[in-house]
Length: 361
Image (tube, rainbow, N blue to C red; front, side):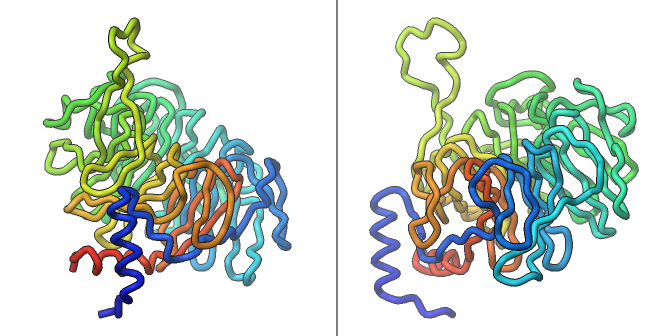
């Protein structure tokens, strides 16, 4: 067991009492991007992005970045040392606001090309439309299926692809034969309801990740983390709260509101990208400008990086700006720091220290 120092214990307990549970025990570093909106490849630390929303592994020492508002797929080559090289990926193919991606065991990449309402596939350097192509909701074979602003993807151990179909407020599955089904939510109905997956309601989900038979969902506009398991939907973390507006005069006054709090009564503010590190769910809590961790199954929430306010700074008290994408690479977390137009990195080692202090084995 790793030795836990008295100072670390006192620091962690102080933050728990403060309600924020910020680790701050490992520094955040910027690995790519100057912070300036633009489109520039570089091997000398001068690369530019335009609101990158997602990141995933493209193989050994290679990160794939969804450079959303440049409508590009970029690669970050970590093999070049302390200053990774950034290059265009996927040739001259055209995308329309790509936001997330996954890679299967055969090395094929699948991209949520949000504004074209499609799931694209990259195989052997060529780009194909894998599913969708027109806005709407339709199950069936991939060539006939329709999506509406698909934003996030996950892949299970059997090769099935799960889609956070944001505009339809549902979760979809594309099986290994290319057949699309709706696994949770009511198409086109926005709301909040747990229970049977066929009647459960979401509010524009924008994050998804899978732990064995459990599907975690970032239910973004409800400011919640939901779980789909055994055909049922339940709330795992976060607090559903409507605003105290008195006599609301229209439906916009009654949209759920976010917040920033830790522990087992956590609050989020537009959670988006999700990732897993062991039994810890990692959440890009975008409007809190923070990366949060949630211990499964206890539901205890703490903050890994970010201070709850927008900004940019590296180090132990790092600041982020609208982070949307997260990906675990070894013992490091890669962050698409969207508002800063940067790719950031932080060690996850402090999570083990936090778990020990809190009594989790």
